[in-house]
Image (cartoon, one colour):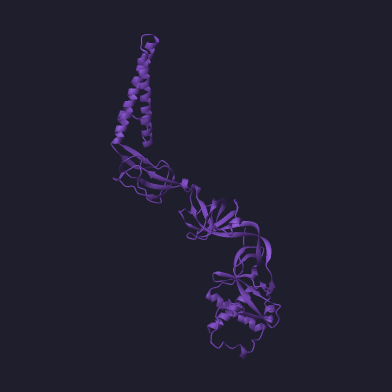
Length: 409
């Protein structure tokens, strides 16, 4: 859903000065400046607190408050489409990775011209492996095949003789045993050759070869490659790694205090800071069962929905997990102001009496905004007995900026 952004004044130095000039001009039209009070002189030690974010550091007269339409009120519990913030990365399940290894010992020949990052399809030729032992294995297979053919023919003759009472049972039994043993030998040699990539159905004495082909076992991107012509490899040598981004997902770390609000199927929006500010979509799929004691988080896996960002493994992501129709503590948009990297609301006691009201800034973390209200989480607690500015809080902020600039001079 669309979440409108509160209308805040920008916090850059130029904008702050412009805001101050406009504010001071406005003040000049609504109230005369008070006479200096000798009792309000600087402390004896000469120290002046330059931080306006302390209790009682911002003051406005009752006339100014009325002229600026500054309103007071309290927080409300509203049904807002609130969200949780989380960080994480793009990841892949274990079955998305494939290591390309040599299936036998040998020398690498005629390596294909691939580099890291290239996309290859399953069955693509990566290179060749040469070893004279391959010749011996094919030769043994063809010899066993020819011998088995002869034994079967001899067995058929002896069985016929025995049936005609002209043969010996012992001879038939010995040939049956030889056929069974040779069949097993042939089957074992066939499996070894097929494992190496040599098709036994097409094998003839004329097609015996000393090389086998190295194929890509799956479609994917090359992440690492350690393959060059002339190198000698063993079956344990990893020549290349491929990753298949078909099952790309989002791995998020959700704080322990928030994990109870996360459910499967919830909508997730995320950005990849290293790319751009484009918003991508995902959906909560699995909530982890293991607690990370170091950063107090639980891992949440989300499946990507729709368009996906270009994949680079472990690329950092900022995400929001949306909580549909969640009850949240909320204030009108005009109550929340930004200053630098932080957001504030202002508290005061408008019923305390006197000509001035003192305002206390309270730091908050804003959440979702809907129908003119913004969800907030208080970083600084709300003092007892104080009410919050619910409209035109930026005028209070401007008064604080005026105080800062006054201290600077």
